Amino acid sequence: MSASLRPLTTRDWPEVRRIYAEGIATGHATFETEPPATWDDFDTGKLAAHRFVAVIDGRVVGWAAVSAVSSRCVYRGVVEHSVYVEADARGRGIGHLLVEAVIASTEGDGVWTIQSSIFADNHASLALHARHGFRTVGFRERIARDAGGVWRDTVLIERRSPVVGGYDEGPDAAASGPSSSTYAEASSRLGSTQPGRTKWHVYPFGMRTR
Image 1 (cartoon, rainbow, N blue to C red):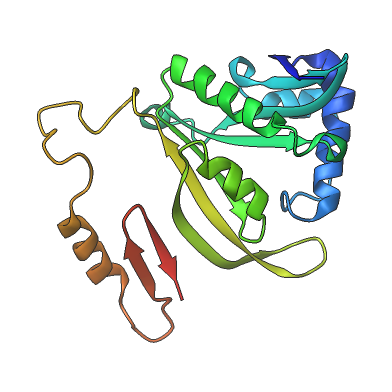
Image 2 (image 1 turned 45 degrees about the vertical axis):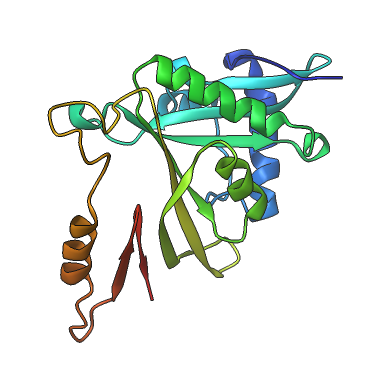
């Protein structure tokens, strides 16, 4: 049976929390060690207009939501998203449906960038997002320890909307994006090998340390 989507509401919280906890338990979804304790805690951090659940035969099997990355007006078009699918429903295209819903909803609301940080060894999630136009913009090595005390690497990904806030807007449209000279200058500044400093490598759409 195929899945259908609808807005995520308070009535879905028990199932959303269950799926969230299941994802946390895999050790590959997030640094969080437990889901929010209450609906109010979850609701406060998620934008109401862009929350969805996937339902099969009346049962919630996945959810997606977004959060604002900043309260500053200049970042009003940038959000961070989360997608969770229960184990028994994986491999059935539900993740794709949820990501598509988030993209359509946020673009319709004027959002130009959707971003997320994914564990580097979560290949399934990285592949899912690549299929929907997300690109890697950075790699953070040993950024934090997980619940088991293991240092983890994360990959910062983003999807820049082709219809909202595009590079071709405004009088300087000729260069559809940052020029190679921009990267060269950034690389020169960030590639410093001063004692005690991390060396950064800048490449199109991101940076990487080593």
